[in-house]
Image (cartoon, rainbow, N blue to C red; front, side, top):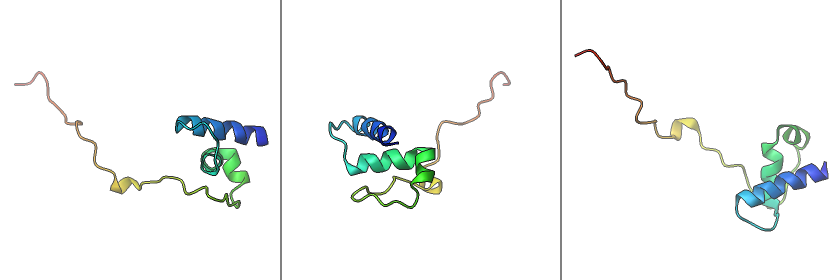
Length: 73
């Protein structure tokens, strides 16, 4: 289990262009993995922060999805 957490945390660190794995990367690795998230749902990781989450109603509406009728004049 430790190897899997470290591998996922290393991937998270690499995605953020960091060379060291910190508590934030461990938090991201654990919370984004389905099985690890279930297993460690009651665990608090110090200095891990929170997962980024923006409610869908706050996101801007997608533009460019207009229907164009082609062929009928």
